Length: 159
Image (cartoon, rainbow, N blue to C red; front, top):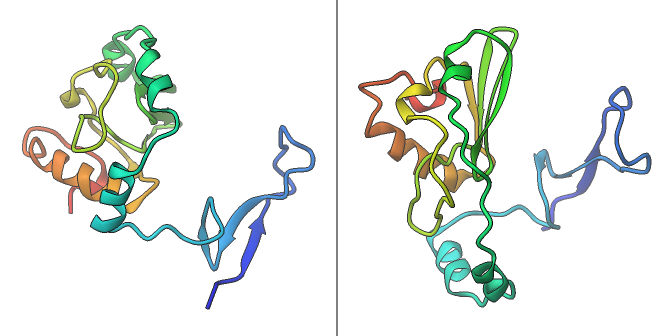
């Protein structure tokens, strides 16, 4: 049986789109489509083997942003937002350091387009870490474990 789709909105939070209906929920979980994505090895394999309509366009696109060293910003105590590449951001505000969607290394099926703007060892003192999908959590935890003894990565990766 399909779960009920609802929308979650915060009327006190201004939106760039005045008609925005809110974030889609399937049951009590955020979703992009009409049903929840349930990651599995089969779905990963299907995704990797499926035809990609943008494949040729992506091959022709060689643009990558310049990598700017962020070591100094990470070492300072100021509030900062740093793009670490791919969809990964580090936000430090009011003494909290948050890491969003960490993809620090290339892995099977996911390739970074450029180097990190710092050494992985510079990413210490994370208050928390946010992942957007379960498979990324599994892959990133295994990558973090290889250098966990030398650094103090985010709380969810210390388990």
